[in-house]
Structures are given as C-alpha cells and as structure tokens.
Length: 407
Image (cartoon, one colour):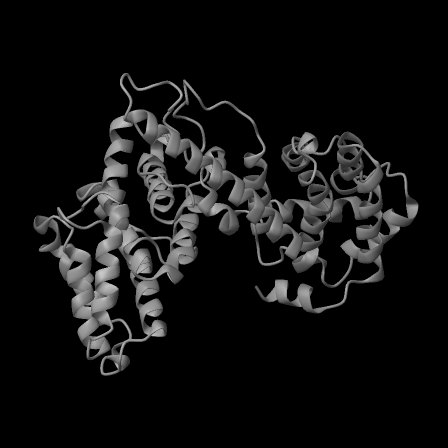
C-alpha cells in the first residue's frame, strides 16, 4: 500500500511519460499481434526493440531509486494501455490473455547486458505481485474454453472466474487501477450479471413447463436438484410465512425501537439463529456467535443503534462467519457451517445479514474474493465447497438484488 501511495502521489518521470505515450500511440494504429510482439521485445526480451529512445528511457527507469518497489505499477499500466484499447473492440478481446501469457514464457535468450538482467529481475518480481494476479484473473474472463459437458474436475479454480461477476471488482482491480480500468471492469461485471439473471430466469420459467425444455438450461455448476433447492430457499417462505427479505424488513422495522445497541445485539442473535437447525445453533457455534456479537463494539452498548453501528457490526460478523483478511485467510467457521448446516443454508445465513444491511453487500463479495484468491490454483474438485458456495451466492444475489424478475 505504501509503495502504491508513493507511486500515485509522485509525478511521473519524463521517461515514464515517454513510455506511456509511446505505447498509447502504437495502440491506436497497430494490430494486437504487432503490439504483443512489441511488448515482448521491450519488456520480456529487452533485445531488438525498434526505438533506441524508448530503450534508453526504460534503462533509466529500471535503474532508478523507485524501480524496486514501483516498477510493477509501471508494467501494469503499460499492459492496460493495450488492454483498454482492446476492451472497447470485442473482436480484439482475445488478445488480452495472449498478452498476459507472455509472462509465463521464459525469454528466448540469456540476458546479454546488465540492463537486461535488471529488467528480467523486475519482470520476475512483477509476476509475484497482486497486479499480475489480477491480470491473470482478467485473462480468464476472455478465455473462451468450453466448460460445458465434461467440465473436468481438475481445472484450477481460477478458470471459473468468468462465472462470478460479484468477484470482478475485488479480483480484477488493484489499488493502482485507473478510473478507466474500474469503469471497464464494472461494465464487464454488469454484462455478466445480466446474462446470468436472464439465463436463471429462463431456467425457472421452463422448470414449470411439462418435460422441462432444453431452452431452460441450468446456468450454474449445481445439479438441477441443488439449484431448485437454492431457488426455493432464497425466494420461498423460509419459516412457512416469510421470505428472507420479509424477515429482514420486519427485523429492520422492529430494531428502530430497540432501546440500546447492547439489546440490539441480543435480538440480532435471535434473528440470525431463528432459521438455523436448533441442534446446531444451540451447540458450540451458537455460543461462538453470541460471544462474537457481545464482544463487538462493547463501548457502544448503551448507545442507540444507528447506521454506523449496524454496518460495523455486520462487517465484524462477516469477518467471523466467512474470512477476515488476505493476511489471515483462516475460515474455520465457514467450513464448519457449510459442513454441518449445508452450503445453501449457510449462504442463506449470509443473505440475512446483507438483506438487513445492504451497505455490506460489497464487503461480503470481498470476503469471497479473499477465499477465491487463496484457492485460485486449487483444482475444482479440491474446493468443491467453495465452488458450490459461489454458485449459491450467484443465485442468492440474483433472486434478491437482481433486475430481472425471477419468480
């Protein structure tokens, strides 16, 4: 974070400005293949580049005082000068993974000079950065590999990135992402989310027709039985007379009259555990949940509940229930919940929180992005619980926050 702030706050050097301008001009007139080859020669090989002026600028940059900490930001921005150009032209979007795959290939020759050696050290360091992780995940969105019928269980989790638009902003962007990059990713997210909602709506419609039509294909990686259960759970009468949304609205209204924050936390516990199997909520989990709530902002127990306290409480609760941070990716409670309650009821519990406090929706997505990044290299069959959780989250969000009428 500190190095990003330094990069963000300082003015770009003349050499950096020259490099950005050079790639910007080339991106306007050259084909993706030409640009990828240009990028490879300059940054990956460091040999045979056509512009001595650009080579000299890059040499000054790699030996600068800031290169060790900030070169990754320069390289990321250079990638995005090309990517942003291709994102606006669908026929060129296939070039995005090709560009990023360059970093997976070793240079064709040994580094002949001290400059080449230093450049390659910095590029290697870049491939271990958050910026490169985000680029790799972006590449997956544009890899059109079939995942239909066989859907091999040995595929790495990262290849499923296109399926989860709720993760896009958290996985495809980093602190140094520009405003243009953020807008592009949000547009991608909106398109993917709308398409999933349309597909899910079609599936639900055709489920009510005789001999379920093939036009209503299951848009998830869940079985039809699992998907139907999830739809019923997230849209149906969870207690016989109220949906999750009804219960959240009732509790929100009731909480306005709660005399103190301390009292609210006890009532919040009842709200959360009301839809959980009593055999589970009365055991160790229930005790841990109650203790977690009691230990949350105890200095405010005598205050009236307000939006700030509600948001803070729900964020702490999501840390507890899912995962706290990339630095502390322990998720024992979430694993225990999915293993004992089941994945759909567990996602239902999380849904109760975000329906009550919509401001933490983004924060819940962030928790799942931490888990996704933590397990991105794992095979799908090794993290089946996470895949099914994300599929359920897609359904829960689409049926409760989506723009398409699903039921």
